[in-house]
Picture 1 (cartoon, rainbow, N blue to C red):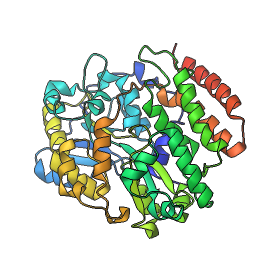
Picture 2: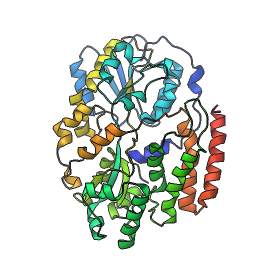
Picture 3: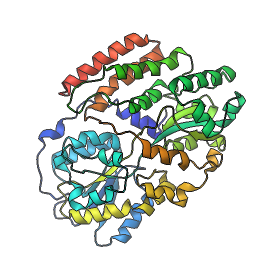
Picture 4: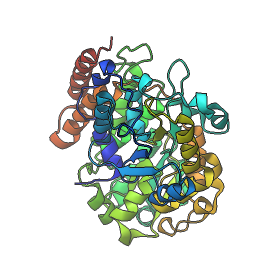
Length: 424
């Protein structure tokens, strides 16, 4: 089973449906951590921060008593449970990008970072990313760690075998619309039948949904998953199945990447590491071009300060240092964490050529993509509601279900889930 970060992101959209547990949770004056403790507990997940930077922060702030904890398992659930219980709350904690819509709904559990000077920092950063951690009334709950601008990874050797262009600019020009992409993919698969241009329907749908103006639930908390725009996104996605160019590799992507079955893979900047780990023997054969239509964003997380934290100013100083420009460059080198700070994109760690990608300077693709990501409202119920659509896409590709019936069933199931979430 593929355990890439993209797989985990998609899986999070199929998670359990309960998201209201914190709404009536008890308050606490524990101040975070064990009562009476002066340590600064820092929670994050494996790969969420650079371990080297975290270790260095203990030296940089010797009086803070920074105590890092790499929390395994369901990070959201563990943080939610801790905040609900009101004890052993960390002074600083990560929040995954896909979980921020939920934690925005319980904003009182977190510190407004604007009261500590975050607005001045945000002025020179990516507005769309900072907006993901803002409440409707303007409170800033999170300081961005990273982003996941998307692009198209492809095997240049397989494209060459099919007689297709391999230069990133030419590939992007040939696949600038989804119709163009599918025509390109048909030619690829027709010339090299063992290779496919679409890894899975879910991978395409996630990209297209990120390109449209509205997702599954609107800002006024109304279900809009049955919109004409969403239906068009669905129809464009399932077209890959009708054309026979879907590798159906959602549950075996690593093997498909290594074998060349997946010759084109749509994903975020951090997905480069997944490909390197899955297919080390293909080094030098991959390249990156813009995705069809426009870039979107997958993932990208935040550091936050729970409202129970006593020394909020001290915690914010730690966050600013850990996520400073140079340290974001270090995090990219250490753990392929793509910086949320555009200034870090100018560092040598990001501007050098990548041998795995044929020496290409991939920042030339991901940097502009990061600036062009469209803002989208993501409701707290988005993951739960969208799960119905991803389930039905699996039925289409794995079980041969009729796409029209799958759409009808997806909308019905999603509307039912939305209603149970309190969505109009």
